[in-house]
Structures are given as structure tokens and as C-alpha cells.
Image 1 (cartoon, rainbow, N blue to C red):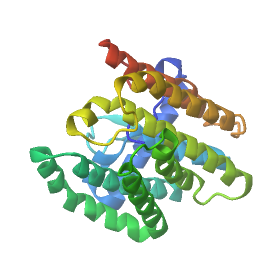
Image 2: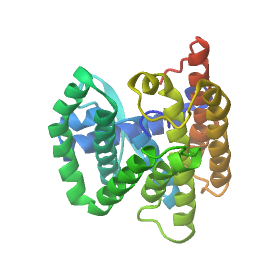
Image 3: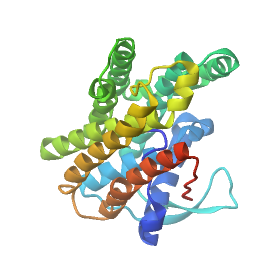
Amino acid sequence: MFGYVTVYKPELKIKDYSLYKGVYCTLCKRMGREYTQLSRLLLSYDGAFFVLFKQGLSGETADLKKSRCSFNPCKKCLKVGCAGSLYSLAGAVTVILAYFKLKDNINDNKGIKKLVLYCLMPLFSLFRKKAAKKFPDIYNYVGEQMNSQLMTEQKENVSLDEAADASGKILSYLFSYGESGEKAQLAAGFGYQLGRAVYFLDAYDDYEKDLKRRSFNPFPDRETLSEYAPQAVRLCAGALCGYLKDYPEGQFKDIADNIIYDGLYYQIERITEKYRGEHVEQSL
């Protein structure tokens, strides 16, 4: 996910933003305990969304308690009381995805930047080993799909659907992990469309970088990029909105709605304005 699945703060209620931040801070603390303090640098708000989506799907609620940031003890924050195994799952998912993202970045870069990324691999491998030991099935599945993605990118004339399929399958598997019945079906469908949306956003955002590095990008030229990239994300967002209609009402529903209804569309606009030479900013 890596930075594209976030709330749109101007449309979020204060109580919901506090809950969102509380989930994030709780996950950050859990990662620090399970994967060393350095692993907390890997965390993004995408991980917080993964937790709150699955927690809301289960019908659970979260109570917030006052706490202090481990990095900055002078800073007050909130944490979720009685944080369960879901936070361990989210920490492992964050670590595993970060590891494979690093491998992908190493393949895409050259020269000094590639060397710098290589230097990070031992640390990421240490985190990955701990996560793979706890959740070997997740690690193996993500690895298989990343290999499938690499093979797809080596083909000629790859369609947009084919290019985004592995990303969709990964999030489909992760979001439905541990679920059953109708909840598993909802989470799997939601995860698949979210994975596709994130893939298209990333390809849209990184088009210039990929062009310079001569790396794979599913959009073959600027005309195709400007026409199809926003449309591809909007189609995925529309499908996600359909799944949210069946998402349980509860403590996390408004946050999930905000991230999909407003957050994804904000990301489309932000990237589009970047290519127009304008600047759109949202402060979290």
C-alpha cells in the first residue's frame, strides 16, 4: 500500500481522527516490541487502515487510553487498550511487504542508489525472518505473487488488468486472512480492488521515475497515462464503495468510508495536479 491509503483529514470528525491515530500509534508500539525500534520506521498509515478495517469487520470496538510516544517521551499520544493479535498480524504484514518492496526497488534502480538499497537488505532480512517465522503462509504467498508480478512485467503488451492482478491478489489474501464465510468474501473482494487501486496509483505517481530508470510501467506513454490512470483508479474506487455498503456499521465505518470515498480521490487529484505543475497538500 505504501502511503496511498490514508484518511482525508478535512472531512474526518475529530473523534474518528483520534481513533485513527490511536490505532497507528498502537501498531507502532507493537512493531517496536516485536521487531526492534528500527522497524517502526517501516510503518505507514496503510498499516493502520489494515487494522481498523479488519477490526471493524469483526464487530470489535477499541477504547483509547492516554500514552506517550516511545520515540519522543515528551509527546503525548493515544493507544488502543487491550490490543490483540490483530496488531501482531499487521506488524508482520508491514514488515513482509516492506521487504519485498525493497527487493523490487533494488531491481528498479542502478548506481549509487542501488548500492544504498543493498545496504539496507540485511536489516530488512532480519525483520523478514521474524515475521516469516510467525506467519510463513503469508510470507510464502506474498513471495509467490511478487515472482508472478516480475514474470508479468517481462512480457510484451501487458494489459492493465494483468499488470495489477498480483497486487490485487496479495491484498485480497491479506484482508481476508483469518476471516470466514461472508466476511471473508467481502474482505477478499475489497482487498483485491484496493490492491489494484494502489498499483495504479503507484504507477501513475512514479511514471516519470520509471521513465528515467527505464523500469516497467503499465502505462506505455503520457497520453495513455493521463487518460487511463485516473480512470483505472476511479473504477477500482467505485467497486470499493460497493463493498463498503456491506461493511458493518460501527466504530470504524466512518473512517473506512472517508479513506475510500475521499482519500483515494484525493490521491488521484494530487497526482494529476503534480503533472499539471500545481500543488495539492493535505496535512495529517
